[in-house]
Length: 349
Image (cartoon, rainbow, N blue to C red):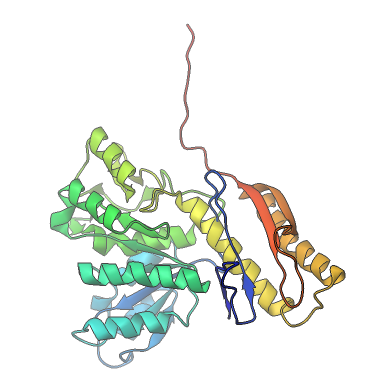
């Protein structure tokens, strides 16, 4: 499916719908067929599953039959977090850089919403992940990724914040908090699939800020100033509020709201899919055809408006670029609706 970003000085060659988002003030936006977490499984039991293959699982029993009960912790966490299903790619035993490159290329061909690793991974692979996400975004494929660090790194929030800065990207979420569940500690990298499942399973008109986490405690409780520093660095922090573990604020490493970014992904993915299925190559680039396309895009955005995802929708032909020949340029604008996250009270006595 062709698509992606476009530049007026270098127009794409392949037929497709090309979207150009211009952030006015702090415009942020959300994504498509929701609920799928992608995980490259690093180990599995011999027998049912084979290396370098895809498997889709929707429950723990199914995963255990395929991969063995001792190898599905990340899958279980993603499902517990709220994922509808997990798209699993099986890495070969003792996978090397080339195998991870093959994994990324394989996932390029599959739709999913959020990516997470199976446990801890190297900084080299982290760098490759960031480049992969950027390349896919340029090609019109939009997904988020949740990363984390080792247990040792989780004891020092400064290390986690440095990881956020190094992986600054509006599609990357960097978890810096490990958790304890029924006496077992999980590093932030090991627990990242749970957060990935939570993001994938949350409706696009909802935020994960203050969302409760199914854990007994965090492995390191941060001070108020440490939490503030983490948020300013673009880190996803889990806190214990005295009763439960919860997400402090739903942020990406670029300090964009996760809710807003998922709206951008929804708009990019859903409009492109509709155009490919219904409009490209099927209607004339005439006034009537252009009106039909405008009407469809506006109807889609208004459906998001009905669910309080955005408001003030406008879809018109772009006056800066003539829609002639086989090219149509639309100018789309709307206002994103954020969640209420800060309440200020003035008490008069």
